[in-house]
Picture 1: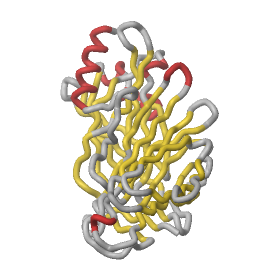
Picture 2: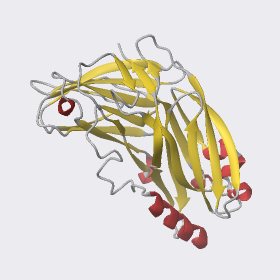
Picture 3: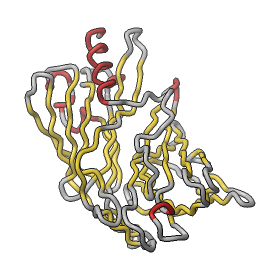
Picture 4: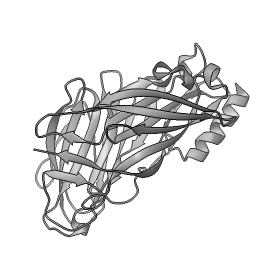
Amino acid sequence: MRAIWTVAIASLCAAGLATPASAQAPAQRLPSAIIMYPNILADGVFETRIEMVNLSGRTQDVKCHFLSPPTCNGTDFFIRLTPNQPISWLASRGTLGTGNFFVNAPPFNGEGSLKCFVVPDEHGIDHQNAIQGRSITFGPDGYTESIGAIGIQRLTPGEFSTTLELDGDTYAQCPDNYHFTFVASEPGDPATESELILSTCDEDLENLISKTTVVQFQIINEFEQLLSAATSVRCYDRKVLSEINSVFTRDTLGTPTGQAIVRGVQGAVIAVIVDKFVTPAGAPAVAANEPALSRGRPARIRIP
């Protein structure tokens, strides 16, 4: 196990992972007009703290939507952030502001994703690219995973519309594919069963329509041998990697770690791997594996 641990740590560092206890900044470090939280989990065992910060010197109105399977229906709410204001709340409790502090986040129970959109009072780009975010999911025995929200910037000035075109012109596109270094799971050891979190970029929240997309994986082991796998997602899913395909296990992969390229077929997706492994002392550990992003993919989001 020590040799596996050494290779795994080197690979995780190369991937630029944020360790759950020490990560302070989200993966998307640029102020954005849209932020997407891939994973919100509040099921009575696990809880998620949602964090958001207004990086601008002006008040910002933000509209947010929770999406959860199997219906993929959205629950929407508004947040008003004063200049440079951070805010956080527990998903299962929600939060309600008073006075100038206007937040009306309802309690959320179950699992799903969260998308938030700046609703500007002026048309300039600097009035729209304003927010960052992060979610921290925690559970029994110190379990913690910290995941930065994916940020989408506004690229051209203009009036806010309830149809958001992530086309590389009005807004930046969604990532086209994701490059991960992952730790292969060990047979019969649940402490090494890493998980994949998927959510879709395209959403019709106005008409409550969610599309299913196939998600393809190209996997390369340490001998540069190429393997493949596939799954599907409709609005949100969280899967154990070894249940998607045995290629994510050490027996099939043939090496302790591998590289995975993840891409949606019918539409763009958001993807995060939660790595689970065992320390040299035999304690289970977890790290949110935030990937390198490659190229762009058009998407459209319609909100009520």
